[in-house]
Image (tube, rainbow, N blue to C red; front, side):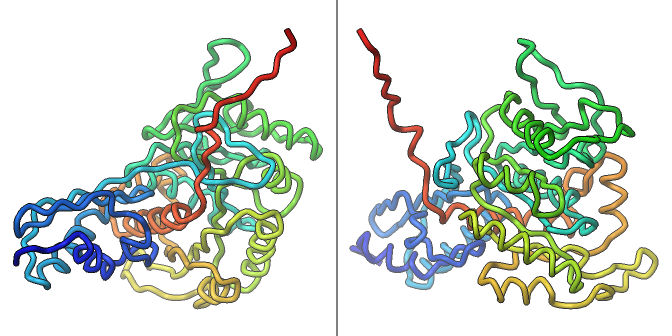
Length: 362
């Protein structure tokens, strides 16, 4: 084919949809360059979120679309560029953190912390630099899940260095107290501790900070929404009605404080028998999907009740790190791509580009 134009190539690429957010590549502004050399077409695709696991699939779709029009394909380069996105009005971004994703459930016992740690590791596996903040002051669990102990280092006596495990930066009150020490604190002390953990940790160039929230819609959640920049929230639930009731409260809380909800994760969706592999909906069926439809958000994915997930976090070896090729890890990575791709569609934050104006009296 000869004399193909840029507009014709764009028209073809408009038929290729990003599998993680459903937008076509032109509408998503993912096509950064188109090069035409005789009858051959090359293109650079730049996604706004980490998606290493779907690069090859997307490349194949692009090549098939061009070939279907008898166009010879040169090089199709696909990459990710993660930028900062807007947060609540009146709240500023934190240094060295582009985006924060709050993981909430409204109810305890639904596997939110396990989901948080594996989501953070999945974002990292997809190509992002990630940290996790354990915001559950009363019941910190991330140190055990990451296999970490001991107090964090400090270089100046005022701030602390994040603890590192599986190349994941983390901070938790659990690093500062003994595992069996109860936190008998009232609300103001708890929220103050959360702000200190976040602001006095020397996070290093994070694309995403995953914040593992405690269950409920109380002081900590309110502090998070009012004082701490949150780019988006993810709601974790199980299919059963009792869990869904509280998950809906968490979702409505974020809506009221203008934090975008990226979607719902249905955990313990099915039980997989460790002996025979039989899969059964022991907690009910379709609850997360119904909730997502009711509130017009996405169902980001479903995860099974599988003994290997529990064994992994109990031993400090989360599934995504311990079994990178497993089917369950692929589910976590798909959830990571979908949630971050939804965030990538939100408005960008440009405050870092503006110079700071200082007025001095001479």
